[in-house]
Length: 277
Image (cartoon, rainbow, N blue to C red; front, side, top):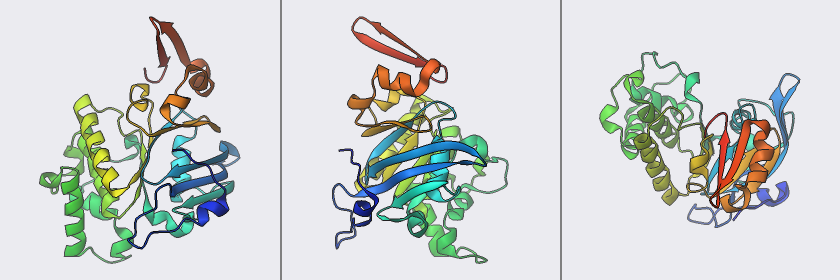
């Protein structure tokens, strides 16, 4: 189910006594959100709500504002206007619930840190400033690495891992910090089919803990079968809904414009972008 509600309604969402969100609870609510860099507007008047526990694909061309949206949610970018609620609270009060895994060209893989160090770095709030992690922090990190199948690589230098393993390490980092919302920016870029399948297995496992996943991707082959909802974006919201409702040639053409070609042949529709087929 895809829901849109007012900021007041989102703020009223409450926890059950066992700490689990009620069915239909909203993990992320955007209300007339606008953001950008300097005087350049990258996102304009976004309003949408993402249910807790859903896996949502964020789809749009290069420059559509996908990374900008992630940075605004986790506080790396101050919005021009509008509101972001996380689990019904103002974003600045609840950002520890959301973890951002950036595109991997933004990471220095030669930095001399181990896989364990990378995961522990995600626990800065728990460790405290100017303090060293203790055995309990490292145990939490190790359990997170176990969950993504990387415990045997804990002492490896992070740059020695394969592309898929690096992505799993950063998911472990997010889990170690206690995040219930994962913002994954192009996690499938440059990984093979086996690594992609492994990542989806991990995301499937996280459903049992009602972890919400907002995942940016250019891969149109994945979005109709692996996601509960699609958020189609090109600086503004083009559409948001179940794949069968919004993954249509007219909507995708509106999002990608001249960057997309559409063919209909033998009763099938083929959509190809100049970024990914």
